[in-house]
Length: 430
Ligand code: UD1
Image (cartoon, rainbow, N blue to C red; front, side, top):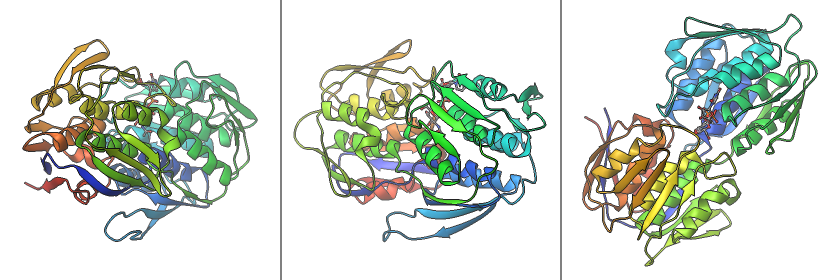
C-alpha cells in the first residue's frame, strides 16, 4: 500500500493549479442519468472517487468516454468526459459499489425520476459520523415516492404518472439531500419548492448544469430552491467549478510553511470565510488575474477560533487542515465542529507530531507549539489525511503518512503539486 514521505521545513513558493471540484463533479456525473442525450463535463478531476462513480454509472447503463487532455505541461490532467445514458439498464445500485463511496447513493434521485423505481444500497464513505439518509427518504416521500427499507437496501417507487412536485423544508441542511431532491424534482409533475436547502456552490453548479439541460430551477445559491418539473431533459456541455476545498487546503499549507504561492484557476468568492480565517492567522491573500496569491513571510501564525457551518460558513471539509495550521500558532485557539459528530480523528495523529490538542465535546482546544517533529502517522479520512500532510510540511524531519488511498479519493496529483513549489514530498510504494 502506498505511503507519502514528507521531509518538512521548506517554504512553498510557486504556482499550484487548482483542479475541478470533486464535490461538484460527482453530482454532475450522476445528473447524466436524467437524460438519454450526451452530457459533456469539462475540468473533471482525476480522482479515485470519480473513477469509482464511472464504474457505478456504467452499471446503470451510462456509456462513458474520456478525452484525456494535457492542459498544462506536467501540471494538471483535467479531463473532458462524455456521459450518454440511452437506456437505464439496471435500477439497482448494489452494496459492493455504494459502500465504497457515500455519494453514489445519490443515484436514487435520477433513477426514481426517470424510471419510476430505484433499489439502492444504504451508503458507506468516510467514517466521520453516522451520516444517516433520513432526509433523502423524507424528501422523496414528499414528492410522493413510496419507500421501503429492506435488507440494507432502500427500495423506492414513484406513482404511476411519475413523482409529484411538492413543498419540502429540510429540517437540517444537507448538501447530498439537496442535490438528490433537486435532480428528482426536475422531471416531476408540477412545481417543487425546497426550503432550508444547501447553499453550497456545488449545489448551484449542479442547478446551472441541469438548467443547461432544460430544467427550470431558480433560487440556487439561496436557501429556497424552486424547481418547475419538465417532461424531459436534453444533453449539455458544462465546466466543473474549481475545488474550493483544494484551494483552501493549499492556502493553509502556505500559511503554515511560509512562502509565496499563486493558486491558479480558482475563485476567492468560493471560500470567503475560510480565506478570512487564514488572513487572521497571518497570511496575506490577494486576488490575481489567474486566481489567488497567498503569502506569509516573517510574521508568525496567530491563533484564530473557528466554528464549522454550512455554506457560507467555515467548511467542515477544511476543519482538519485549519487545525493543522493552528498547531503552530502563537497562542491558544478553539475549533468547534457542528456538521459531523465524529470528525476529530486527526487529533491523535497530529499529537504524534507534537501538537497539543484537547477535546471537549465538539470543541478542540489547540495550544500552539513552536515546532512539530516528523513521525509516522495514519490517514483516517480524506480531509484528515491532508491535514497530516500540511503539518508534515512544517514539521522538522521525516513524516510518513500511511493509508494514502484516502488522499487519492480527493486530491489530484498532490505530491506533484507540492514538489513543484519546493516541498519534499514523495510517494513510496511498498
Ligand atoms: C457533502 C460533501 C462532504 C461535506 C458535507 C458537508 C460531497 C460528495 N460531500 O457530504 O465533503 O463534508 O457535504 O459540507 O459533496 N444528514 C442527516 N440525514 C441525512 C443526510 C445528512 O442527518 O439524510 C446529516 C449528516 O449526518 C451531517 C449533516 O447532515 O451531520 C450534513 O451532511 P450532508 O450535507 O448531507 O453531507 P454530504 O452531502 O454527505
